[in-house]
Length: 178
Image: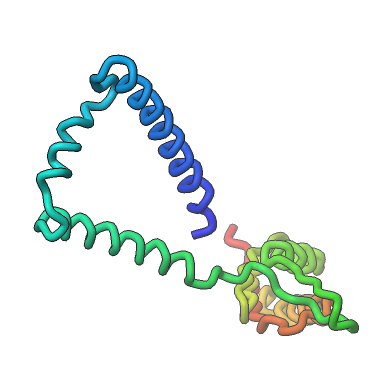
């Protein structure tokens, strides 16, 4: 929901600004001409005066607006997906973290640093890091032989970071397709 907050806030601010400008123009127009300028609000005023609060249409619109409000509040209350993994610190006053994207880049660089690996795809979640490394060799046997060195290099890199809760490492080495 964080991604949607800024555009929604902009739209809401623009709507409030537009309504404010229209309201100011209508107040000035009513004071000068005694007639509506931009919005024919007199029909709304007559409808509001003749409609009671317990009318069916008022209840329906109130229910719709309450449901929309509850949905928006529910979306905002829901916790965000964690995109940072906390690092261990010697002092409790110090707080450091690494982003999941940053950890994925580190692991990708570490995997491609192993001899025989030409590329790697890394997906980091909160509890698991899944690495698919592409071998330069064509055969499955040669690719399987690279699984152990890649796993050791990645485990050493994760241990060196000192993550508070290191994700489990799942490594798969695939042979070159052509």
